[in-house]
Length: 331
Length: 271
Image (cartoon, rainbow over all chains, first blue to last red; front, side):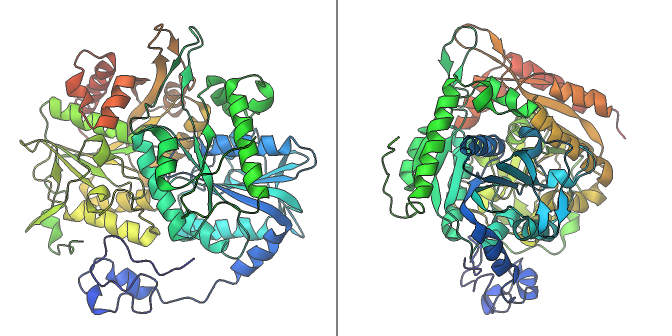
């Protein structure tokens, strides 16, 4: 990725925050961030980037789960994508949770209270099943009340360790669950993985415009850092009442929902997931919804989407983010 | 972007009577929804209100109050908030007003976010506001540490914690409670949002995201429980359209809950 970014609200003729002139150019005078830019001397590339590329060379497919907005179901989706992929016994799957301040993966995957062990070859993931390993900051905390009150650099340090030091072994899929936003964690991931082979990002959203607004920002982010986008998933699409079995829209897609947003932004749409309260319940209990409720429409939707993702990974990467073409889902 | 105003401390928050932070460990539980509704209801209760959005990467407030195309202006005292009404009883400040394009991503690391937040705290000219409601991003990181540091001298009243009922959300809010304790921020109470959804077809109440998690957490942590806001499609719709729910649906039960919450905030004993 290019580290020289010109902030959108920068003064005219801003040389870019990563430039050698950052904080020193004429245009920087009076900019509120002048000091910050000036103090950041250009750094040589981090040697960890090569070490991470080496570590992840044993990973066939790396998929990032992103969303601009919080609470749209990134961790739920990550966990179930992992369960779905791991239901094929011949595949090895790893889940890395880089949400440092709000790690949900341990609970959603039923691993609360587990600890990480260290071996000669690095940190060992915690295994849900023989072919499904998980790593999260949640395993490093002593109590569920412990807060990780860290600024960016410490978070970045831990993410680097997670990417470099976790001994995944030979795995087929590494799923990386992220916190909401477009800040330290995301920039670090993009930077640290710049030499590793990433298949791309799956972007999760809910149908309402308030969420789509943030998701468009996430798409802009992916383009800025040259992160390929595998596609967009719309979560909590509709809700079927358990009493009358009729569907209603909890988050009305007032601007056409994720499908239209994806089409407008030129990224693939991977599918819709209806809201099934049993899914939330499974997450609270740390069970796989796919095996607990195999006949739910949500399970079928999940399986379709998982199929779409596998297909895109096997094609050897995603569609180019800028081509604007939408591919047909053959499943 | 406007240059910082140097002689800030005369403006800043000096004329603000009460500062309320809306926090949650988890994203998407309704922090911005609660912030806007609390602000609108406080205005309805006759207060002069400011609403500051420090979620820099995902600002939702401008959309929710239908202020998306507005810009921030500068006056000698600092940045002028964007006002929702002509009477200037509800002023809003958000990074959303500083972006040229609504799809622009603010891809900033901590130090830049911190500088922006400090400016928001020190350089906005709020003008005798009774309540300043601060909406935050999820987590316990840069934004939160910085806003607490910047607010120290203004003695914020405390934090309203928002959660949804399910255990996954409550788990993150427990961490936010620890953050409040560590930083010495008083917890005004917990709100459980998206608590129950009444089916529009048959009026059956569905507990989409379980039930009672917020109240249980409040008991567990011995902090006040402020109330349950149900999942109300009228509220969601109002937010999508940027309309004032509290003014449009005066008969709504949801509004009743919001009013009860406001009363508890207004009538709390002054510390």
